Length: 252
Image 1 (cartoon, rainbow, N blue to C red):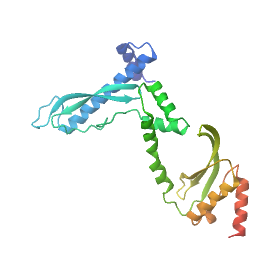
Image 2: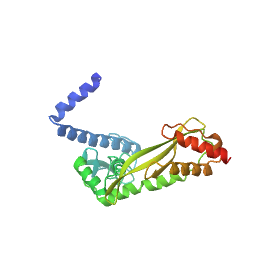
Image 3: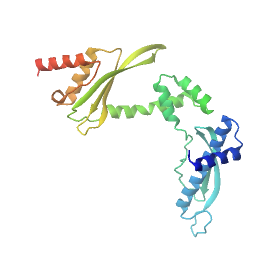
Image 4: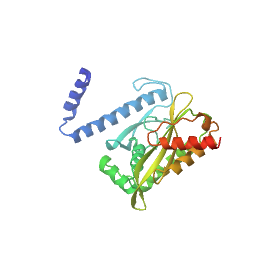
């Protein structure tokens, strides 16, 4: 830790009389609010074309502040948003109608991916951050990623993938109140530019040679030169490689 950082910490301890972890959270919340305000002041300067202490012939000018309640990683807090007379100021640090600055969407998606129900997610967020989120809001957040998933599934593929890696990832899911195991078959490719990317993910009940073979045939119909360029490296599926090559030799 640098000397400058130590000095900042000492100043914080003295300024906020920090004694507990909760005091630290309160101090950080206050600093966050102050930092946001200063950044918005700079945005207002740029919007009006002159600083707060300067004079100008501009017919638009500062018109006080408006308090706004937002949810942050340190809990709910109020910030002061500078206003202009013509109401043309559009802050970018915290945009108009933005009520959340905690990246809570990503946290919700992460908890949802781990199998938590909407009610469990709502209760967890309230316990950690101190603000309520309805189950409907959580469902809206998780639904936002569906178009992104569809775009990824329908993206165009290259004609040649020199190297493919195949393996299965096992995880537990809740299905009608019952926890069961599923296997996600992941095909990772290295393209002709030497970059790694996930080619496809298919979910099945268990590790299955038939499902793996179907996935390969599906890829072969999409990627025209796959059968000529294919190379697999995997510990679990070396037998699948042998089976695939044998069938290719019988049916070139």
